[in-house]
Length: 252
Image: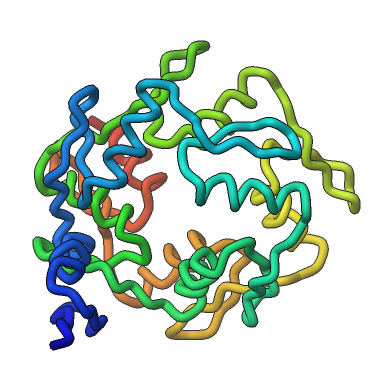
């Protein structure tokens, strides 16, 4: 008998697969890391995470020797050597090495947000964003396992720490061929190049106005919906953007 998720309608052949899937919607993470306390919705990602603490990286790239804790990360990395990104977004032309990355990206254009918070109704494109959001209600602090040796700032992802370190080294390896301006990562360069091309791939679902960045489009859409998710802990005032909240907080 097939088992259907009442939240999103996805069908599973096995009940235990449905139970595990439901945790994406509820944010439940019953499997806890014994080192840092970070929670996971399934035992397998916990085992992979614990490798980070032990320094284990069993999956090695034969081209450059770089090692990874997950086989999926190795597969994604190998696209660096082959430049193969066969999955292309029909809306903006951005390409991806894996189909799941394309499916996740397309939600930027479709507006699909399948992961909803049961406390306030806010919805998200990625389950990880929902998990982070739920800490607003629980007061739980995010798990930051990756620490910058220069300034002490901590990050939940190794990739974000790697990008952050470039601020200290001044490294900006990605250069715009049009004007020569350099950036710390390719995504910033891609956004910048839209200044030259005039491309605005992110459209407001209400009025159709175009934007170069999905985050700016989301901020704009809040002018239509009235959503103001950033709340001041001192006085309770709410704001549409983090920048507005930060500016307001200075009066306290």
